[in-house]
Length: 238
Image: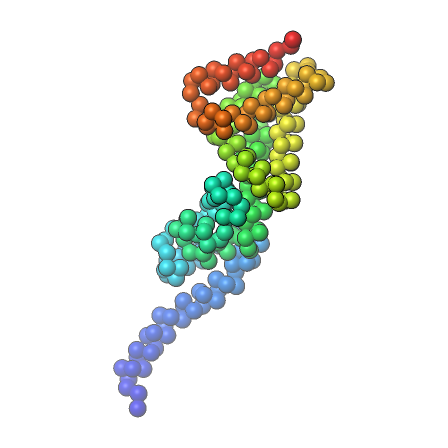
């Protein structure tokens, strides 16, 4: 015959384990809908992490954190290294946390390209303060923003990725087109046309894109003087 003490112990184990079983079921029910709907479900995630079910420390990792870690791995070791378990180790969280934000690895890769376009190109092109400036000041301000925040940091990594992936190639082409159009419009407003217009547009873009790789991303005072001198030369009529 089962003792009352044993029955009480079983009941206690059920009371304490039932919420975890429920949370487990809830997690797998909502994780993919969260990725599709863009919902972070912070309350559920916080409770999940609080229970220690991931076996990891209580680190809150956002969608952007996964994307930034993906870009870092892309730049360091190529797209083949961008894997879910590797990213989880880099971030110090459980692999299951990935699915709060993305349905699968391909969804992550697609989001990385969108993030790169938004945070490293559109952040300048769509900056209302910069866009409202006269063309000379606009070019200078855009150049300074790219330098100050090293917005070309992942250009080479994405370009290498583009050699083997159609989606990356399309994103790279679009980003370059948007950048060139932005610069070309400024020189057009300054009165340049034809080959003069295209030469200045390309020189400006090539230097802004390649200078950090050639001379380092941290600009010295001399580097800034060279940048300003180059920009003054490009806006002059010959």
